[in-house]
Amino acid sequence: MHIEIHDNIPLSEIQKVFSDFYPYLKIEFYRKPHKKYEASDEKNQIDPDSLIKDIRATHVSGLLEILPLYRVSQVESEIQQRFGLSAQIYRKEKEGWEQTTDMDDFTLKELNEIGRNSSDEFILEDDEEDFEETSEELDELY
Image 1: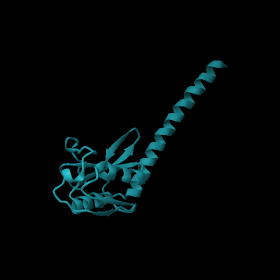
Image 2: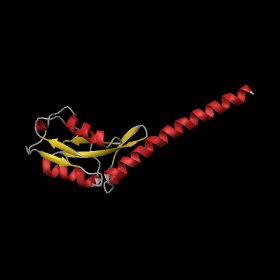
Image 3: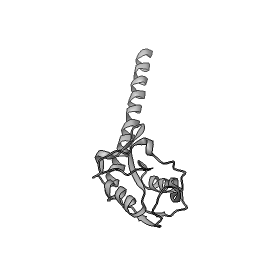
Image 4: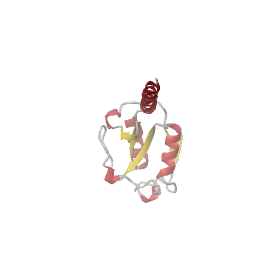
């Protein structure tokens, strides 16, 4: 996956390209950088509609390549170093999203799979609940 980064695009465009490629992951941007294994403070989250030129001091354009075997920490670090943007990758977890702080050494491929499995598991749990309700209804009929 390649993402073109320049001053005149909103963060939401980067987020869309990233999530289209990794549907069980998302990327958010913050005013302050974080260290490896550290969470980003929600109060520092930047509005996705913000243009890149309005939020960074470094005005370097370029193409960001993100491969499935890149580790979370590598991606976040490269975005910070090359483009001056503080990024945090999130993983889908059942009904919500979790920062990948304790999973910075996982690859994007691994995390996307974990997120997919978490979502599939949630769907399976719903189906099992529906099955139990249907079984109880059938028992009442007989």
